[in-house]
Image (cartoon, rainbow, N blue to C red):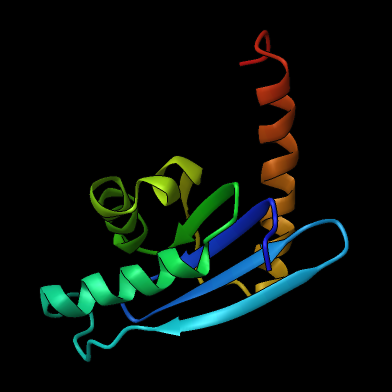
Length: 124
């Protein structure tokens, strides 16, 4: 599904990738191959991040969320390895463990404000 917006909730164990437009919502969960709670082998983390980036293919704006640093590590990894995905990431915000419906609601509110600000450079 190629949509304009996506929200990703992630930690080091899994990612919830939710892509949406006005009429559709598509969610998928991507599990890390690592069995370590915070840090696995570099190859496992790279494979996990690759899977998440692949799931975001075709999405124009991505909001990263999650409770820890995995979302920021993913953003940094994308800057080095997946430039297209990196340019789509608009922000990274801390959240607890929302449901997919709560993620979509959060993202819709965020993107409504983000899109309004992007459309009018006088709003900061």
